[in-house]
Amino acid sequence: MAFSSLVLAVSQLLLGQWQFYKMIYQGQEMPPRDSNLVLQYTFEESGVSRLKWSYKNDSKFHCERIGQFSFDESNFYDKVTWVNPDNSVQCGSDPDMQLGRISQVPYSIVEGDLFTKIPLNGEVIYYVWKRIE
Image (cartoon, rainbow, N blue to C red; front, top):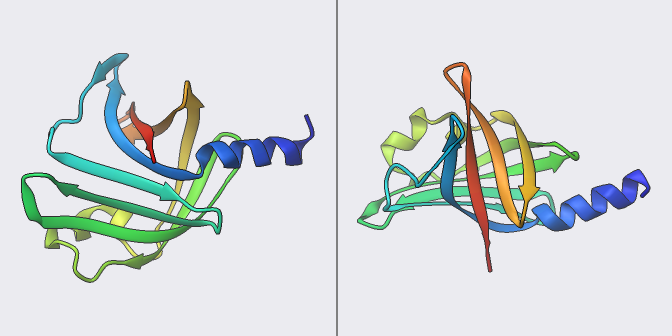
């Protein structure tokens, strides 16, 4: 398969809306620490990404930002270009909610799920996302 065909195939797999539903830490699958968390990541064909989260039991708390993303076969790169001015105050301490931040996130798609690899105190945690329609 030619590289351009591979990139096109990967883009079709990555594009869409994803919801975080479990994590893997030290080889163990775990549900989110808070069952009320609604964490979603969207990748649009235009190269726009949207990351947002809220809690089912707290209608006043929300964090949202928009970015510009690109990717290769093993990483996506995401630059924050807009942060919702109505975000909850606590959002500002999260690096993913800071204007201009560029992230490099190793990822893979396994059996239809998106796995993102996040460093954590010298170890790795995987966030696992399912596609939502």
